[in-house]
Image (cartoon, rainbow, N blue to C red; front, side, top):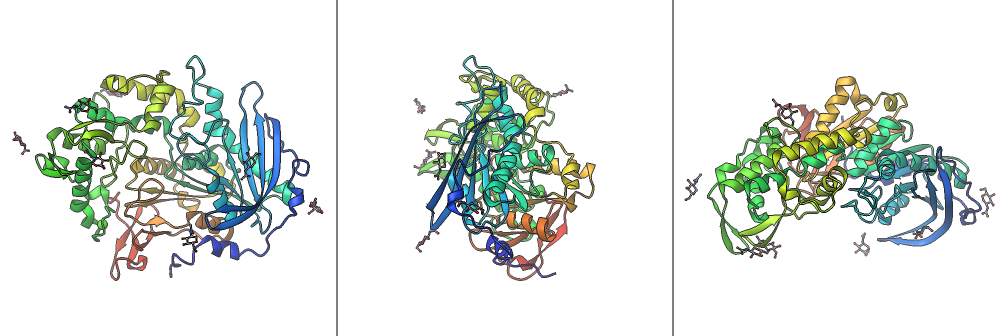
Length: 523
Ligand SMILES: *[C@@H]1O[C@H](CO)[C@@H](O)[C@H](O)[C@H]1NC(C)=O
Ligand SMILES: *[C@@H]1O[C@H](CO)[C@@H](O)[C@H](O)[C@H]1NC(C)=O
Ligand SMILES: *[C@@H]1O[C@H](CO)[C@@H](O)[C@H](O)[C@H]1NC(C)=O
Ligand SMILES: *[C@@H]1O[C@H](CO)[C@@H](O)[C@H](O)[C@H]1NC(C)=O
Ligand SMILES: *[C@@H]1O[C@H](CO)[C@@H](O)[C@H](O)[C@H]1NC(C)=O
Ligand SMILES: *[C@@H]1O[C@H](CO)[C@@H](O)[C@H](O)[C@H]1NC(C)=O
Ligand SMILES: *[C@@H]1O[C@H](CO)[C@@H](O)[C@H](O)[C@H]1NC(C)=O
Ligand SMILES: [Ca+2]
């Protein structure tokens, strides 16, 4: 089989294949011209529609109809704003649902503009809370007496997702005179979780779903994300970034070649047994200061990699893979510290995790998490699961209704993801496969070695996975591989789990030098 090159598989290729595109008169883009959507169990509060002409996004200029639908669930005291942007010329006939990140249900306008630039109509919802703050839930999680606002949590977890699909389809139908031929979800992180929630609970909302680095197992992994900080508190050691970076670099040096190619990427983390304790007493230079790697600093990294354990030592959740950055600042990593000098640092927890524990579990936004002992952390995890798994766990392995409806889904996950444990995604996919051994017929999972959270890292990042979902749905082109490219130009055809990409011969930079093979021990 000849693999398509990375360049041929762009969205331009997909939309050029379309025979007809729809255009509308901007005059039809008005509150009076657009039919009011009907949303089950919700009450419309307001609809605005105005043409936006000459909108600049980077170097592209867009003309679209900007529709905002505001509605409430009677009795729940919420107000949800759902945005639909519809191209005024050359609509490709498809609706795109656009996902969010962290506590935000959607991204900012530039992400919607990217979808319009590819001729999609695009829908996104704020779920009834601001989408401008993604790293904490301070503005909406608790009421004045510090009780959890369950209505807004339901909106965030699932309800507003299906409603956005309903609204996006109805508004498209009203403006163009016919609804979308196909609808696609596109998201990473929280957006990935949203995609899986749609497949699980609303299996006909979208025909195709791109659910990358999904924040599934939410009540479990958000507590497990605090584990690195807990370990540092227990050991009373807060290694500066240069120390954790030195340990990560040593792991990459030790394990890079185990996959057969020295490329700065650990593609077989399962074979990597590098022990940080081998670095104890090694001296490194941090900002011109000599620092020794202490026993406790090395041990803290070992425990971060091992993942969360209970006070009696049993496994609770996965850790990060070796090679993932541990300390890139508190908004992007779990083992972050803040330092006034190389020898004087404190822990700097990842805000999405500490916010979940303080507000949703303890309902005490000012709680000092450094005081937690191991038994208390165990009980926080148990409460998180007991109270919230049925709402936002997003880990139901039964995708039979989505499959029956003809849905197709792709998940990819960077193996150097510093925030969401890739083993959690593998765990979910295994459970789906246990229920349905033919899962690959409609849902494929592509681990992406060396890639960080949703983007970045030394490894090749999927180039345009949404287009591969579209081709799978519309043309039956099965994604045998996911085309990816690294910052240095290396291309790779990522393999569907449990296959891995193995080097054969030829240019290590070129995806054609690799084949997909089964190597269960690699990841
Ligand atoms: C709205 O669209 C319809 C059908 O395409 C067209 O006949 C009509 O002229 C349009 N109205 C305006 C105000 O552009
Ligand atoms: C915009 O166009 C300029 C000039 O052609 C180019 O240098 C720049 O890289 C472009 N920016 C983007 C985001 O494409
Ligand atoms: C779209 O409409 C909403 C509601 O009127 C408005 O807040 C927003 O700024 C508009 N967006 C653009 C890009 O015009
Ligand atoms: C590290 O250095 C300390 C102090 O010199 C020493 O007691 C310890 O044995 C050394 N540890 C290792 C693993 O070399
Ligand atoms: C160990 O802790 C876990 C989680 O807290 C608990 O479920 C399990 O029953 C405990 N096992 C033993 C042997 O105490
Ligand atoms: C080293 O310098 C960088 C840049 O000035 C700073 O961000 C970092 O905190 C410093 N590291 C330590 C350990 O002081
Ligand atoms: C460590 O830094 C804190 C402030 O970040 C400062 O108050 C404290 O005095 C420092 N300790 C030492 C031993 O330098
Ligand atoms: Ca390698």
